[in-house]
Length: 144
Image: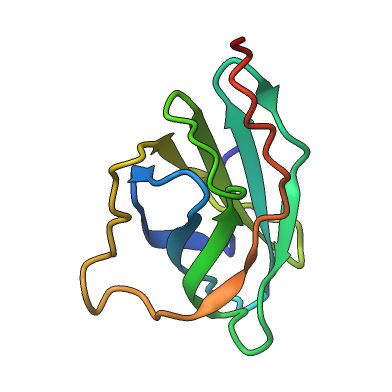
């Protein structure tokens, strides 16, 4: 079993809208803490129903936030294609300089042309950009 060792980062809160309009930028809010103050990298794994996994994306923890991190990572979903049947899963883990990993958190996303992206409850996260999830989505539905 891959158990968290003491000193590993902990994702204390997370939030993401479950639906967005196609082409919108998806914001995934994270609050994390590391008792040793050495968080280094946010590891992002995206998978798409019917397509499989994309290459893993790494987001560097911003300077000054290696002990406590609050803000959002984001995924650009392309240029306004109408793709109501696409579903994505994003798994997020945080790694510290010693190689310790947080427990993963997962987010599910569906595209809905009538969706309004939800915002997190006030006061839980800073509205601060951490960085992009660098994945180029293949949003072909496979239909005619």
